[in-house]
Length: 117
Image 1 (tube, one colour):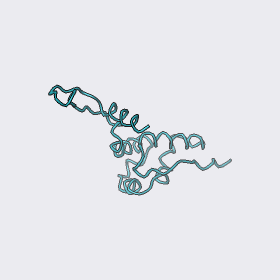
Image 2: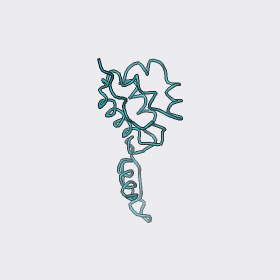
Image 3: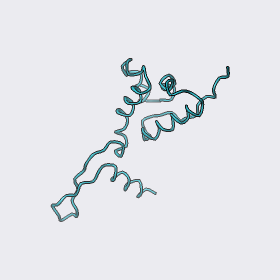
Image 4: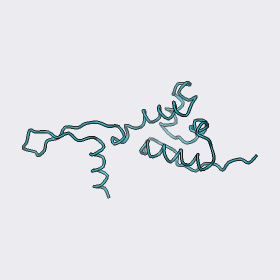
């Protein structure tokens, strides 16, 4: 029986987009032939800083399955990037108007990201 290659993924430090990092993490483990049922076993080795402390403080039952751990992780860290959590923001159509338009946090994040490029 051969041992799968060690997965290559940057550690999550809470400064990344949690959803994108989770996708990279899953892809790295899949590429290393680690089954989804075992993703939770390698998880703590992929965290650093406050994210690793969060993992240590997490309830034991939340660490028993990949689905529970993934849900807990995304629930905790998705707030770092507002486009992950749907929300509605009321904004004036123009500075002199009292009429507001509703735009989601996802739309705002896309505009901010586009402005940086």
